[in-house]
Length: 448
Image (cartoon, rainbow, N blue to C red):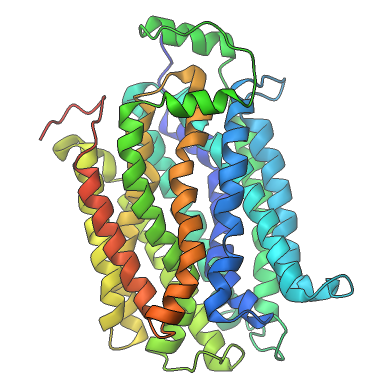
């Protein structure tokens, strides 16, 4: 008994919800620092506010993975989780830029930080089951394609989310100006649109995708010679046992993920102040001028560029991996991304940042696809959700570390200049690439 091969259209539909999730995620990544600075956060404390993002992932994803492995309802196994997560994330998207409405309860900065926490917890509830869904439904020889299509949809959604504020302001005439301490209306409207697209995209996946039952998945594993251990009592404590017993491939990928996501976190947190200060020559304390808003909107544009590049490059990943192997594809992509981030320091004007982000887009496409394609071949379907959740440890822990030390490093070592945090992220990408060459890929047919 084997899993049936799915058509490209079926694979597209089952991952389409990720377009909406990533649109909301991109709005957050490109604009959360700007919004928090508008509410009064200084550049040195930004990473501390962002710590809620990886902290929510650390707590939520293994739990969601654990229970989604053991869930079966008339709506499916994974689908209830990303549907609920999308609705909660949409609420956070709508309320975060409008936190000033709730200042009767606490300062807008703290309300905004709370909405950021809600969004991140909800995105994590929605995202982890999507990863497991690809591994659940696709046979081994279609998983690289599945994760690549998912990466492409992530890229398309992120482009829309990243460019939306710029488009509303420059193409549709929505006001981008506001008084000090107030979020411009084009940002508020962008987040509202993102919330509705998020829920709509996930509903499309829910309505068009059929999941295999637990009995069918177990039969598939038996047909492939995968022997399950004696059924264990469902308990969150099992997560610690699973962590200790993780496959060797997963441990090796952990180091690759660590440095990759340390780099990404630094880029997301510090790009807006770095570009405003280093490229637009604005003082760090300027967070409300028209030029600062232009710099923030341009960060959205270049973030959209790297996501657009990742969406296109994702379709080439299966062919490249077939030629040189998955781990080599991933390593070379990370090196290109590292060079792209380091080059930000040297750009003569904002337009050259587009070139820098092309390299980042190549790395981002591979980060979203290759580690999961490699990992899925080393773990049984019965534990796919929990191991995908545990794998998230190697994503969130480096972000938490960066959140704790990133601000002080910028303040005390980099002299308050956030551009050096971007360069550090580039170096971290290259270190991740060196670890990628050492990974053992169980399913890779190309041995270099």
